[in-house]
Image (tube, rainbow, N blue to C red; front, side, top):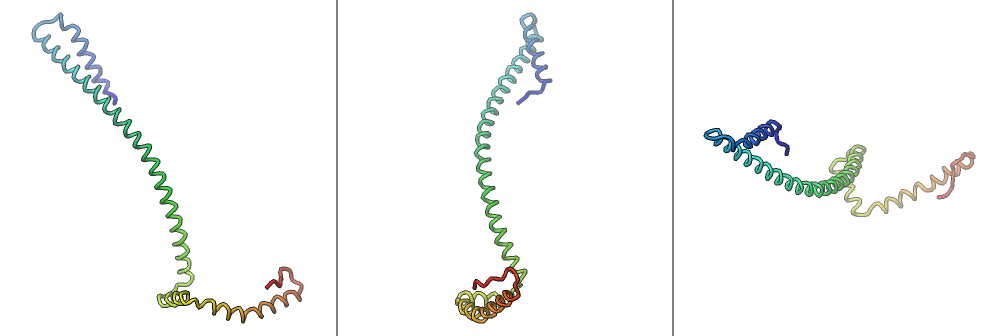
Length: 152
């Protein structure tokens, strides 16, 4: 803590006046003695206040370092959580945007997945689509087009 320079000059003046105290008598000597007492009180109180602030600053610095490390960790975790939720929310929003399902349709999908009816549907679809796919690949090969493979 830095003391105002005007106060320093004032206190220095009082100190120099106190040096001449033995050569003065009466009311002047009494007033200078009183000013000297005030000067010593101010200097001592400033000294102890400075020590107290230094101690407090050391403790807060120590706490600040630990607190900064802790804040970094919590921010990192929050960012990771936000990223996870962001991607999940984006996916959900995208699906809802594309499909725009009503509540009844969502319930139908849930029931469909819970009953595991998709395996039956898959076998029916592949049974009907597989011959068509093979035929398309054969036509593609007959026309000598690149990129046609019969690896079904």
